[in-house]
Amino acid sequence: MIPLPDAEARRALMAHDIKNDNHSIDEDGMSMIVKKTEGYSGADLHTVLKDAAKAPIRELTSLQLRTIPLNKIRPFTVDDVLEVLKTRGTRRLVWARSVAERCVCLSKILLPFNRFDVGKRHSIPHYTAQENTF
Image (cartoon, rainbow, N blue to C red; front, side, top):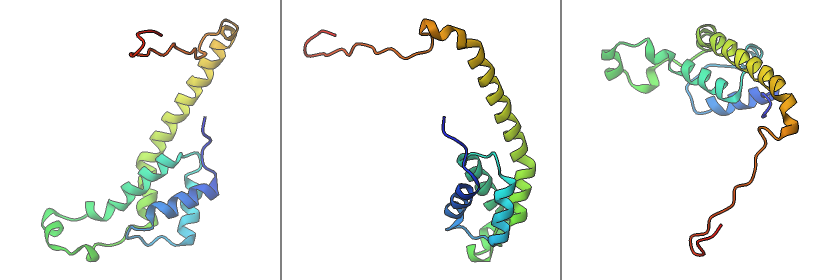
């Protein structure tokens, strides 16, 4: 299993994800987001940041979307990220923890069967068409 990213890794992932986006997140804001995203995977963090980056666009009407130049749309902020974490992040994290707990329970249930090679991969003979043999 791949471990979850630590604080330093989450900071690097976030910096990489938002480097080409219009944002106003400074070092203090990054630190706050890094603390709030403990237990998040890289994919979870990516999803949160992309949702936050869309927040300024969601505020616009369809007429504004057609007429406002891209450089006039406000940058996304730490508050946008925190709002996404409030509304989506908690549900995902709770779901992930419940799945992880179920996996741990399932592995404990299957532990006695390991002596029977249950769950271990076995090699399957490779069929070769030219020789019509396995």
